[in-house]
Amino acid sequence: AVDGSVTVAGLGDGPMTCVTTDGWGIADSGTIRPQDVFGEVGVTTYVSGCTGGPPGLEMYSAPGTVLWPESYDAATDRVTGEAYPWLWAMWVAAPDCDVDLYAVDPFAGAPLTFDNATATLAYGPIEAEVTAAEGTGCDGVAAVGDRATVEITIVASPGFTVHPLP
Image (cartoon, rainbow, N blue to C red; front, side, top):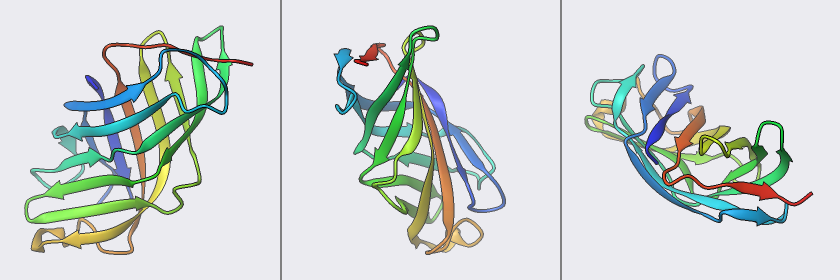
């Protein structure tokens, strides 16, 4: 991951957004069947340009979000489908505060798009729940049981292409 952003809404005073600084994942380039996974998002790090949260905010997406294609639009060279966060959805860190967000239903896919021309993957919103909020700095940021939505954009490098079979 070389560019992109994450936005978590529903925690703290408003949406918290950070830009992508690093990340990894795996993807198959080529033509795949609609029922096949075309990639998995690894850990993506968002620790710069953060707004809407406490100073020192950092966010990390979890490994284990798998990507399924459902349709392909040749005119826009774009794949649409579903993303499934089978592990946690997001980890939020601030000074003296660590927050784990897990998908409310990891089997409920979040809408995704993948633009082959720009290698840009966007997915969400993922409905998530705070399962841990540890540290004295969490007051006003998150508490166990809080609900949030997570939306992620990642630009992959090197780029790859995905063309689902009809």
